[in-house]
Image (cartoon, rainbow, N blue to C red; front, side, top):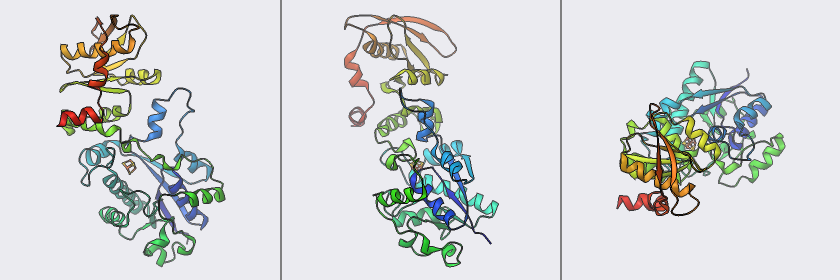
Length: 353
Ligand code: SF4
């Protein structure tokens, strides 16, 4: 009888190749894509960069090109609650809780495997490729914590690992699996050519934007000023977009960097104070609703620095409070504030010490 394998399929090169190596052996393969809400493609689709081609979900495209059924599992709420806010194993170089994330996804995959009767789970992992999750000890820890000890087949590096029961029982031919290790992707690219796989994201791109080390400072600033359990998904998602400024413990300002970000901030602006220049063209910004008058003055000074054509010019803004109440306010530019208040490594570090 045909073996059946259920895998984590992000659409990245490695997980795609893992699926193809099994499919090539005649194994029935299905992919799972877990949507955490922080996927890079989703972010690019919501806020397209000017002139950039439309972002596509490679997982779906790959699955349809190679006739592999794929299920998208929305885990956003649980992920926020159980993984992002309190990761038992901590964060990586960004605010990526990769170990807890893998445990969570693999636990969900195991539940689906057991419910639907798949023989084993596969992943596109490569020994030693990602320092946080693909070292032998961590791989073991993740697999044990997900209740999958010995039940994960890793087609790209299986030969560098002890044989799994699926390999011993002949559900998968170990001889046709690989022994890849390390960060270089030359062999993966050769293999992709052999399979006719040409459409995949840049191999080192990562699968979600939580790994972005620049966002770590915004994340630290956010959790330092509010209990993490009170921070909604939207505020974590917003860390990716715009320029961020800390005005006071209660108030933060997010300023759009380009047209698509302005539109996005406007869409997501419910509950924030919305600031829009009236007498000049310039960016749109969101201000925390708890901001006081001094915060609003500071915010307008920063916004005026982006809009004014000369240093002394007063710029008029429309300020819309939650509930729709709008006022007009004028402000003079505060160019020094731009660096002093920007949320970045230097400013967050200084405030800590
Ligand atoms: S990069 Fe993002 S999606 Fe991938 S394991 Fe880490 S936290 Fe999870």
